[in-house]
Length: 446
Image (cartoon, rainbow, N blue to C red):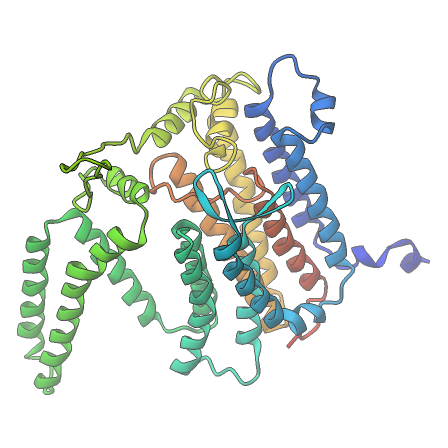
């Protein structure tokens, strides 16, 4: 009798995670409504006409729930069996952007399908998560070998490089979050040390004069050889290693960083990075007006978005100005306040208390996912769960730091809260697949 009363779809489902998801989506709908609602509009009619942003987000939410229902009715083995097919499909979608892209608010990584704008880079995160989990869970994969490390990195970097080619560097950086999955599965700490050292070198290149930094690197190399000379008999090897590392560091400083900041990153992204660290952009190029022989320097207010965002959050104070009572966000002072900068809407309306509450929900969500990951018997399910946690953590951390001026503006949404159909559907699908896999956590999937 009990089995007949309890539908199969609910068996083993983590209802706590579902409630957290519904709560975040509700916060998102209220936030979008608060910045796009116009006084005097019929609320019910505006929700049902499907022309306003909040009504469109409601449609995206309904579609997400339908997809989620389908996923919960699907056998977990389906996701392991089709992981590589989904990955190939994701790469195909990314490649289709080049001939069929549409320019939307300056972004050319979107394919317009009727009235819906599809951004394949958002969906690619889901497909990479599945493919990486599939590869790491294979019996043939020996993750102690360098070849396995390179193969896993290739799965991550291929869609990232295509996304960079679409001038979506911010979304491409999200793929780096998948390296956390690899570290959980045994990637040596040496890779982390190299990556951290490279990041420090890039930051130092931006902060210091190139000649001063070159002298510092040379001094470090000389001191390393001097002190290391006493502790090793393989002195020739020491000199070669130090010389190679020094040459690589100088090469990154002199050539790689300038190439990235002039050829890879877009001009507004570069300006925002240097605005964040309080320096003039040394890579800035003078824009030449057509027909003029002399170049004309154009200076842009690159930190306007962040300044307005901080003003909005600051004006919220401790308890906030109240729902629909904000001034910065209600009167469109903050650009992209319904998408990338939606957190400032929460800060202005509900103040410090509201911000802490939303952060608390996100932290609870991440801890819940990590806990789910550790209770899986299947390597595939564990890797997938850590992939979901890593992507969510990256989006949450960067987006919130971006709105308060602690990170450069790279244009990534806040999960479940920011406006956007592809974003909401992709995040929801990732979460519902995790819920489905966790419901079968006693099963070993390959």
